[in-house]
Length: 396
Image (cartoon, rainbow, N blue to C red; front, side, top):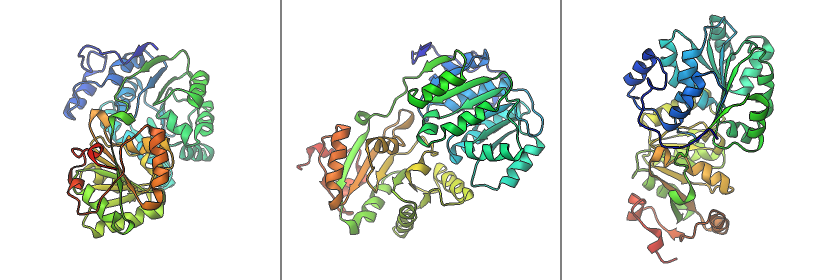
């Protein structure tokens, strides 16, 4: 590794080589000091090197690749972008594009999110008018490539964001097919929470002597999370969830199925909890509205399925509730990592019905957790402040 999460002296974006108009726009947004991943990757990106960054979601990756690329990116011709970012989910495509758009405008560049679940005709119309930097999910981009509505032959700057998620979701063959369509010399940037397995293969095949950077960001580990395992009665489970949600500002609740997410969101609304479901069966506009309302605090709760939640990147989530138990330790950690982001603190709550207890105890052993499962009803005062409450003091 060229750099591994070392403390660097206090520097601003100007010292990293970012031009004044972009620095001013960041300052206007209240962003004045670079995150660690930005400090260590931006100089190499500006030099034109391929860069591989190991950093988790929420570490500031979008600005890390977006700033220098927009500074370097040449203007394009209609349907022939010069910059491309591949991302695993629709929500992430929208968020990346939204974050980079004001910066792109400072450089006279146009950026657009291309993803499935939205009318393809509108996206084609944007491409015909000219888009310099495209942020795309692999499936929709391939659709447009096969139709001849876009060409990536002349792309000079490529970003593969959240490569580990691409692998988890089975998108690697599509990603590699897209990369093979590029015909000119280009700079490739890859960001991922892990660099093993299929991600390692992608690096070796599609990057040239990349600068390797790793951030010792606060990886949300089992030991750092506040875990609460609460036994509930099935008839009281919704009310218990509502009591927990009402004691926090932002909560994400996980269910196993799309139907379950819709049903729970509806029941929470009956308990006077502002909630919205987010899953793959919803129209893209509905998903975007729910995420926007949640980010802005108009609703307290998102009720999400595991796959849909992969596109949710909100820093100040205080509580994650496993309404339906996680199927394995990896899923538990993926879900739970939605809280305690960016150095914050958070609580992870599992609601357990009587017939789920054995499976939960197995999961706890795999995670190395030894705390008790404590029975509670919805009128229990402890639900109002689960951070302070210490389950280890309870008798099992």
